[in-house]
Image (cartoon, rainbow, N blue to C red):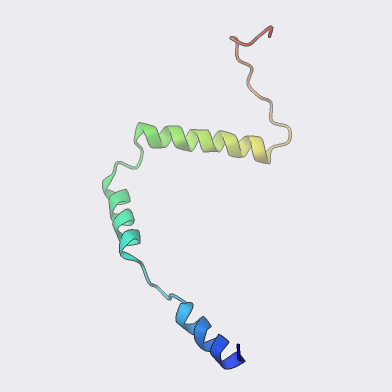
Length: 70
């Protein structure tokens, strides 16, 4: 492919400030849904815990009393 064709193709692919209909819909939906619902709080806590385990090499796993002795 010639350099001129590559440049033309690259220019047509860029999206400056474009938002698709689905992106707009999801942003509107996100605004109308209660942002701190119990389900979202649980997901946020779950991923915070996962990230803490991943990013902290000194992370101490909380021991469950149920599995103590196994």
